[in-house]
Length: 248
Image 1 (cartoon, one colour):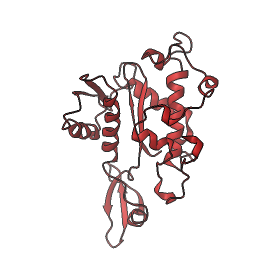
Image 2: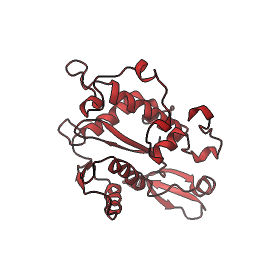
Image 3: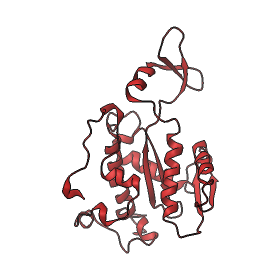
Image 4: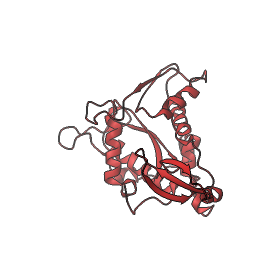
């Protein structure tokens, strides 16, 4: 997955929500003279990194939303706010990416949204246990360590966004319900710490009984994941949907 957004509880290390986004290519984009449709990507030092035909790809696959991260953050926060007790404020810890501030600006215009306190931590701050974003940094480390499709310069990248989100669903269950805070000292899991479970789960217990979306209240975004509606433009509608009658 080229891009995504992940929200956690910084006090308990419980993974709350996730979403997928489709970002544009990174770098400074400057049209080249005499080369229609070519784009020159430069890094901050002004060095040319790659030249490609951007307009042809975007004309065929569609231009990615330049505000995809902002919209994804807003959607995740709305899902969390809907699960809060009435009147309870929300505290958001994030790095200094400007998309968070823009998403909060739009959310605060909605009178139904409770107060949201935003604490910003510089992305340049050392990623130690004293960092307020340590749970997020730890999750990122575990994702890159345990899933080859998230490693840099990998040949195991996810070809479909839907498949990447399904792998993240498995990771979320493992890190919340199975993984202990400490293998030697503390057997508590993240789900136990927030009061969702009384003891750690095993994969055999998790897979013992089949669950259906009609038995649980899912947001529109999570139901789209179950129905496999997350599209990858490069496949142009050739992706299989989860429409089996007995799946619902």
